[in-house]
Length: 384
Image (cartoon, rainbow, N blue to C red; front, side):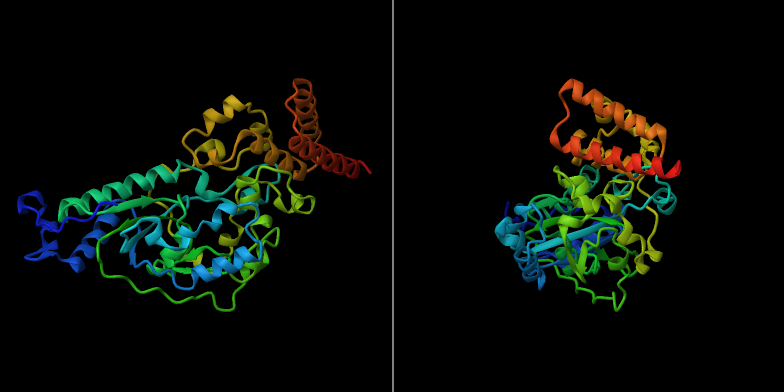
């Protein structure tokens, strides 16, 4: 990490609105923070907060969560640098945390979830990959800071590297950790992405906000797989987001029906959160849902081969899964769909084709057989 050079910048190199950040002895940090907030808004972020490197109670909470074995197979969460920003990036003094709304203008969540013939995809994944969008904006923010005060040390992160981003957002006053373990903002709900700039600038810090979940446990009650085992405690091994995105193996039998038609992620806990009545639709065009993924027919997606899937998902968060997981998840959704001869035929044909081609591995075999059994039961019941 580069050390910041404490040198004045020639006034002619700054815009009129940015010239208040320099004093005779160096940058005016209070004024710089106000400039950073303004630049953040201009770059499409809805809020900017500043924290130090102390993560408060969050490291202890993470340690207990890991000790309880709730991380499933995500052993990489044990990386010690995750709870020590200064060890991760030596020289770090402050972290600039930013949030960007992503909720589509017409989320149509209820309509899709209640129609078992259609596929539900988490709302954050319907547009372009947020990692690239936000990382570019963070770099632009860093460039503006350099233009105002000269070179400084920084590193940008967007849901990457061992960064405890929700803890940092909480410490920076962007919101509090909800009982579903998602950051909630009192004025904006929870439908937003997070990004961070680790810096060596001694900026004034913001104050963490208090928790406003109160006695509400709507998120706990609504979770389809009962993954929120206690307030602020998520069992990743039961979480639909983990199972459908990160996990590559056989999904436990008892969780298959509760997954329903969710083929990538889950939004139920956010959907029922009372604070999301204040959520604002995203103005970011990059997050506008691609039509092919906003509540599509399951059988239409089922017909995609790997080449089509790769083309359709290019530049999207959906690439966090692979094609095999795509087929696995669609198998479950089709098994959970209303009984249909067309669905049964599609499942049977895919099973036969993959077996003949030698591409039917144990994971896909298990899920396809289960889906066919589910459809067989429904069809039999409809003719009884």
